[in-house]
Image (tube, rainbow, N blue to C red; front, side, top):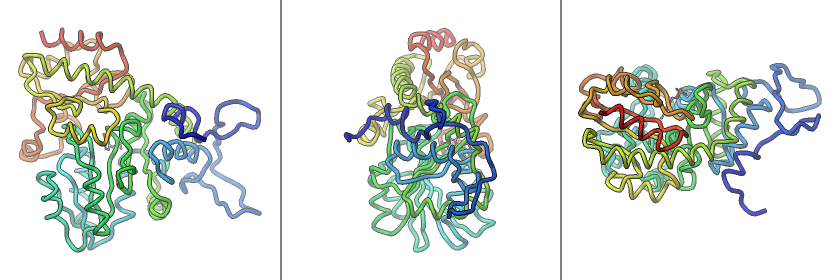
Length: 376
Ligand SMILES: *Cc1c(COP(=O)(O)O)cnc(C)c1O
């Protein structure tokens, strides 16, 4: 069979047949499964019940991975993965510019468990090479990053890791599996906050990891002790959402590009961060490794204040989180990155007048009109 397109995979991959000939996967609610005459031991916390498998099969196919695990949040996926792979005495390198919750996790929980880390001050390949120690086990990146859309060269990261027996891990949330498949570039483990694009309707909290069979097995071993799996009902909701992932993200890419172009030509906008703009420092790398530039656009405005601007918006909703079908906007300095010290915010470019726009699937002109009237 010819390779299928992502749109087709989104709709059809991983379905489990219904005995009554219904075309949807049934929801298997059981937490108790028979065990006689079989080696299988099914249990929701073991990541092996039917509705979990369906979602993982779809996501694994989309990410070109052998297997994966579905979690109850993005942070459950991130923390379970890192605690599965790292032990006391190990070292891990983090890129500059990460999701605020990930930074919190590292700062609050790593030292207590004897795990040492380097948070890079810039993402130049030389700085990454300089940070490598004898006990470095993982290089962890996020590309495009939250909220400044920094782009990291995935092939270069994977080359550095492969020659030194280091694992490469990426948080691929912002790209979604539609725009970027890091495993093609040699990255070992792909993480998602499935709360964002994968769920896509601002009503499911979930997370996922996709990787090779041996690594997934290793991560599952510790993860089932940590207990962050996703229940059958939410897995069904996720399967339903994933059917429209490709068309949603396609429209979001298109809208975001137009909005980024509009914003960068507006006199009251002093800065726009979007990898689809030729002036973005990561544009060439993004072109090489992404098939779409994504639905996230960050920008700084000089006037009105970001509070007044958000109050004046009619369509775009000032609210946290991202990746839904509706456009939302928030100030990272007051939301995802509020726990960072003033110095760290400054150092990371999280200014007080920075806004992060999550572009939805609405009509492009309606969105532009809304932004324009709020800046008057
Ligand atoms: C939201 C987010 C997370 C955390 O996911 P939760 O589902 O909120 O736990 C991790 N990484 C990125 C890039 C995110 O945007």
